[in-house]
Image 1: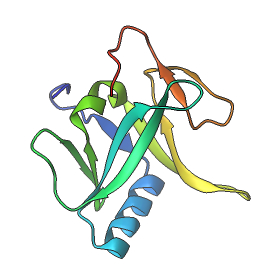
Image 2 (image 1 turned 135 degrees about the vertical axis):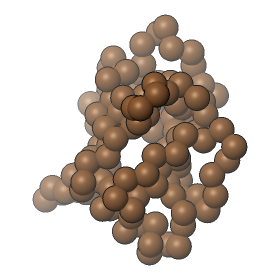
Image 3 (image 1 turned 90 degrees about the vertical axis):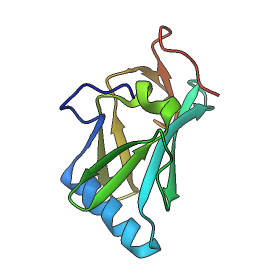
Length: 121
């Protein structure tokens, strides 16, 4: 929807693709839908949900057995994002390296986008 021909909307590191493929296989799901919603101290939060089928306007990104679906309202906010999966002594989880983010809260769970991008519901 908001893509550039020949360029994927988001990319995944090999660690992220492996983890997403593992989660898909474990739960028998066909993909992981990512999006954004209002919330958190900086204004917006990422969402991730298992899905069993793509919706008509989802952007689909497939890599190394992993399948990500991007909700239509989130596509402009996520374009150019790299998704990684990091493991540390205290936590493990997906990390979004998003060039569209202008600010984030201290905990890293909440983000703020450039004011020129339209707000989502």
